[in-house]
Image (cartoon, rainbow, N blue to C red; front, side, top):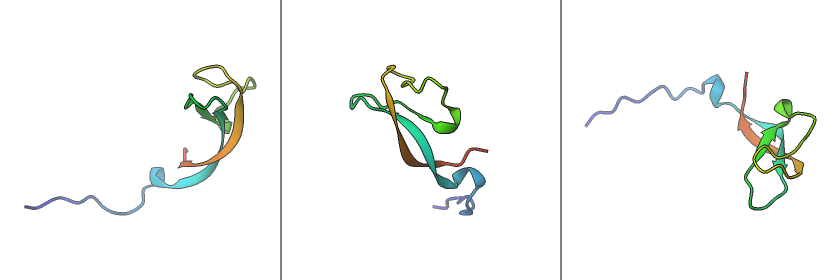
Length: 62
């Protein structure tokens, strides 16, 4: 059985980097947003609770 393997080279969209995000403080909510796209309100986009700043490893956005 033969499989066509795609190139194993890293594509620009595959590059991961540390990004500042605002994450919901409610343990039952998974809401978060990148700092670059956050509004001045800084409320969770899903439940409206307060958020806290975190660092997450996310794909680079051009």
